[in-house]
Image (cartoon, rainbow, N blue to C red):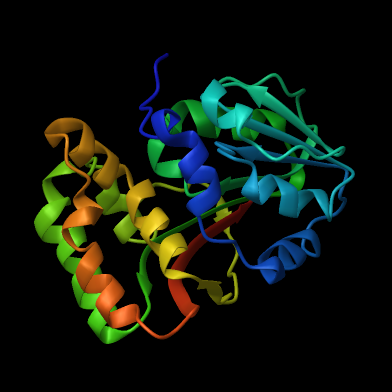
Length: 246
């Protein structure tokens, strides 16, 4: 099957610009499964979640259908990166303790993927998917960011973006759900890091491809004006998590 590839063309930018997931989330997950032998990080992209998982598991298999994303992933002795679709992996039956999907579940063929989950996940193992949409800096910067998101790049976002905005709450999730406590997701960034993050949006990249204009350049001056005088600012994301047990 083909996959919707919105990130291979800017995989290196994506790897450098994305926020970091909370360490406490991975520690909580590792403490809620029977064993920590093998984790499968699906749609791993640049391997950000894979690296965090490797601190808790003897082995991590990290898969992504994009060879460009895998090429930009961070190496780790405990991680086996593979170019594979979520719906057809090479893992053995009932071999996986934990399956994680970070910011990627909305791209999958869910029927095919969930069949793989039921095939490879051990009894008592967990499947966990999380996503983030909006971030918060200051009210003035947030207002400019909102204009970039809705007025400028709005028509260029993939339709799946609505699933992300809902925090995955609207997706079918045929597993016995487990309540997950809230985990704050924050980063301290420079203005240049923040602008790189805005440029890594799939909506920004699609706008650039369609028009030849970098949409972030249309608001960069205003953002820099409100950021001025502060080397680094704290950003906060809204993190939506779905967790289920086999």
